[in-house]
Image 1 (cartoon, helix red, strand yellow):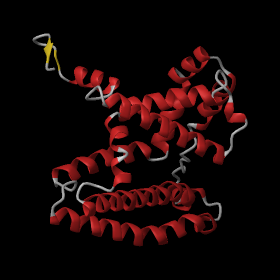
Image 2 (cartoon, helix red, strand yellow; image 1 turned 30 degrees about the horizontal axis):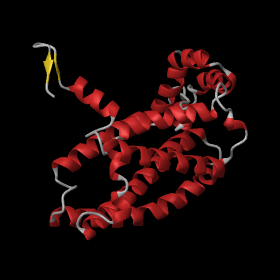
Image 3 (tube, helix red, strand yellow; image 1 turned 60 degrees about the vertical axis):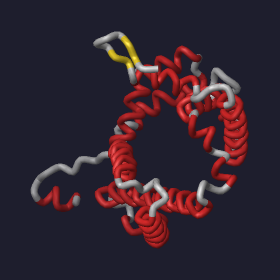
Length: 245
């Protein structure tokens, strides 16, 4: 690609690294900044850091594509226990597993194939991991759905996750607050002393605590607090100043 650009006197534009300069500004603030400094950082160059990374690494298109995938799957009744749905999920699971293996091998060797050629390396560095992640997602979702309908109403270990899912927005925000408190510089500063294994155990503990809290909350309420707020905001009727209960 770079040789072709040179041949026609077109400069090759390197991409994929513009977010790094804003990441360099955000990192020390996350490590040692105060709460208000972190908020200020997130509002300013933190936004450029996160959003440019999503654009330059293809994540923004993946998110949009996954939303469409979920919408189409719902319209095609792929989450219902019907023969057509089960047959299709079997195919998705099988092909996801078969295609994931060679692409994951390619994921481990494409650095040697590119041999430092940025024009070849950067698109491979975005495309191959993204496709591998999508296939792995298809494999996990397919296995979960097939196991669920094999039992009729899901195995017991699957039904354990229902309360957590019903309060997913509340749990997402809560676990973010917990994580910030534990790992950021203005909190317990654990990022300095915890490795991957310790972080995994911390994540499991947080999940178990939130799962237990979700069970207790849903015994007295129909939905989580943030889900309730989101529902009210969704059904606001600005014309009549009323909204459905």
